[in-house]
Length: 416
Image (cartoon, rainbow, N blue to C red):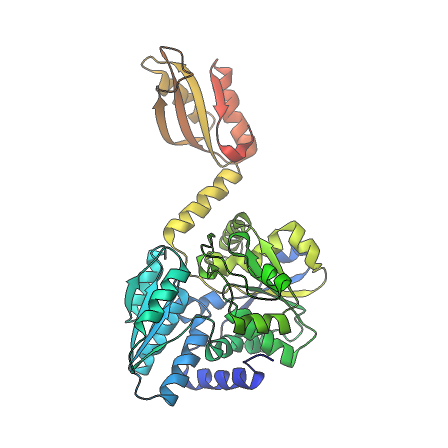
C-alpha cells in the first residue's frame, strides 16, 4: 500500500486552512475547449495560487510538520526547477526559518528571482534537475538542517492532495481530471483524494514526450528515469517519479498520455488568447491533451465534465516569446521570404514597397551575398514579414513574384 492516506491529506487541508497561506483557487469554464472536445471543460486555476503554482500546498504542509516535530531545525534545503523552490521559500519564511534552494542553471530567471524574493538563498548547479537534486542533498548535512524533496515526501504529497479535495468540492459532478506529471507528487496526492471520495472519477496523467517516464515505468513495473529530460514544460522535467509517487500512480491513476512540446505551446497560446490566462509549460500540459486530437480521441471525453489542472503560471518571458513566435510561424503570420535580386542600389526599397503595398509589415531584412549557389552580382534579400495569415501570405508572395522577382518562402513550417 502507499505511504499517503486520505487522513494525511485531510489533515494537510486543516493545516492550510488554519494558516491561510494556501489559497482556494477558482474554477472557470472554457467555451473554446468545450466546443473542441464535445465536453464540459472547466479549468482549475491553480496558477493563481500564491507563488503561482500548486507547490505552495505541499511545501506549507511539509514545513509545518517539520517545525512541529523538530523545533531545533533552523534551515531547510530543497532542489527545484522553480515552483517547489518558491513554495519552500515562502513556507520557510512564514515559519521563521532559513531556506537554501538549489536550482539547475537552466531554470528560468523569473523563477530564480521570485525564489530570492521570498527570502531564500539560491544556488545554481547543473544543467538539469537531477544534478541540482544531488547537490542539494549534499548541503543538508547539519543537525539543524533538513532536506525537503519536491515529491518523494509523504508530507509534500499530502499537501498537494488538498487540491483534489478542493476540486471535488467545487465540481462534485466531475468525470475526468487531467493532471500533469513531473515527479508525481501532484497526481499522487490528487488521485489519492479523489479515489477516497469519488472512486468513479477518472484521473489521467499527462507528460510531454521529452520528459515522459511514467508509461515506461508502468510497463516495466519499476521506476524508469531520464538523465536529461528535454521539454519546454520545465516544471515537470524531473527525470522521473519516485517509488512513493509511482506506488500512488499505480494504485489510483486510471491512465497516462503523452503530448508534444508543440501541443504545449499551442495550449499556452490558446489559454492566453481565449481564457486570458498566462500559464507556464507545465501549467498548460493538461490542456495540451485536449488539443492533441489523437489523445483526446483515446480518452473519449464526449459528454463528460472534464477538469484540466492549470498547475503553474510562472512562465519565463523568453520562453513566452519563443512560444508566441512559434505560433505565429505555424499560423503563417510570421514568414521569411528570400528574394533573388540583381545586387544594385534601390532593390531593397523597391521590394519593400511591394510588400508594404499589400499591407504587410517588414520586421527585419538582411542581405545574403556569400551563398555558394549565388551567381556573381546576385544576392538574396531575406525579409521577415508579418501577415494576417495564409491568404495574406500568398498575396505578399504574388506581389513580389508579379514584379518579376524569384521569391521563396523559407519559413520551415510554411510548407513551401
